[in-house]
Image (cartoon, rainbow, N blue to C red; front, side, top):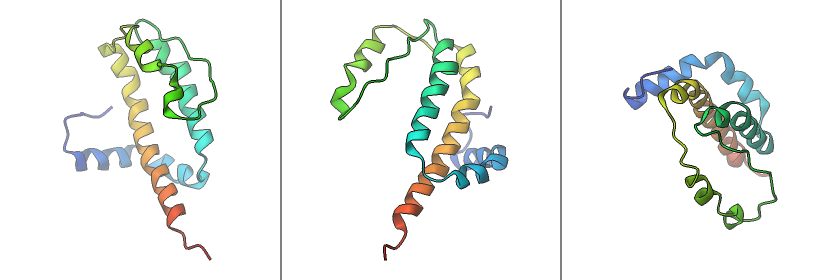
Length: 119
């Protein structure tokens, strides 16, 4: 885990250095948005949500056709009065850092793919 108060450029360099061994494999995976979404779901379900106080119940996946199809999840979650104590922050910080680097790599893959000439 890195100091969150660091200069953004220094922090970005530190993250790239910390995850340099994984970056190439993330790049070679290609654009797999559905897999990325399920990966996030699995991390939340098995690691992140159980550590919250009170524990967050996992939502049953339902088809979503627009942002308004969320069944008021934000409001329902707010009513749970969840808090992220220091213990939780220590557990999730390395995961958040890894996901941040993955998001940057994956965004670059998507943008590179979109910028390819169409012949």
